[in-house]
Length: 431
Ligand SMILES: [Zn+2]
Ligand SMILES: [Zn+2]
Picture 1: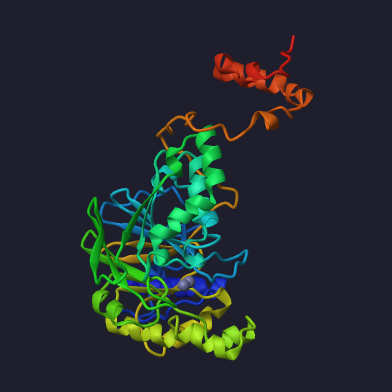
Picture 2: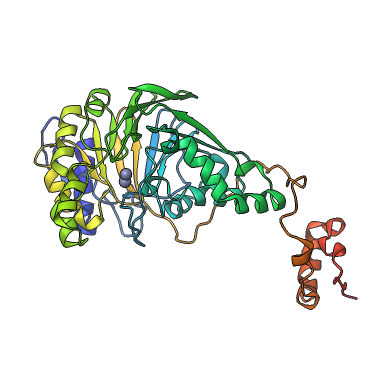
């Protein structure tokens, strides 16, 4: 199955120009399927007015996972420098038991998360590999956006300690909340305070394969990574008898080779070549070859790691899309196994039997989605963030001009008894 799927991916990617893996199966056999058997893009379409049996697309919200299945969606695969077409690192893992866990939430990635139209109340658990902004820069958008779109509970964050207290996750989140205090106070008073809380589960970044999460049949372990300073980690996720790996930024390290061995599904960074960063990014050559190959993992190094681990499927990310073909060429010098070169909105369905890669197709205009649970009420015990001085500046004619609109709304939803206008000195009801 994997062999045939990889043939299909190759066909699609030739069309859309995405660099992908070779058609080499895990046992190194290569067979061109008969046309009748082929699983090309859309499958074999047997007439001019029929449903395509096997499109290379995933439409969010239309597929229920099997109990032993995991769906992984790349919501960001790029670099810290923001571009409209590619967000920074972010992967969502959806499990057949209903759990949805976010691994890194780099700058720009929340737009892709919202395009999946997953209700905010199911996006409450976030694992952070390290504290570079391209791995957590959109936490503000998850925090506040989920608040306004119905999350009824606090966010929970799992992340590593640092070499000193001020380099760890707990310190970062404590000061994140201080920086956004104005946002917190105003929403707590007007909406509800609960979704604005963040519970931090900080763990020792030096722990080797230590369990940092064990709930509902999902076990997550942390291993150290080597990247820019002490603190970064990678995660090993066990579910339904499978081992999945989410690697944060790291140069090649002994822990990943040891503990990720035999993984079913393995996400790991693969950085653009030094020459790419000199030519396309204007970096000084000295910085370019250290960035790629001392603080990160280059293509040939990624391949060497995968050849040692032999995952059922490897995923490379953390390069600009234009750099992917060069990165893949580097990987193929040292690894011939199943491979995806990740781009934003690439999706994998993973079971013990098969791993399928597709692209998510979604609208640019999706918004946060509300789930079934109502949020707790506002907190009116805290001081009103708006003073009488500012309220005294409200211009009555501007407010009263909305009376027809608001009267209609009050009538439709039976809100007359809660009419906020009655406390206002400027209120002049329509006759
Ligand atoms: Zn980093
Ligand atoms: Zn990074």
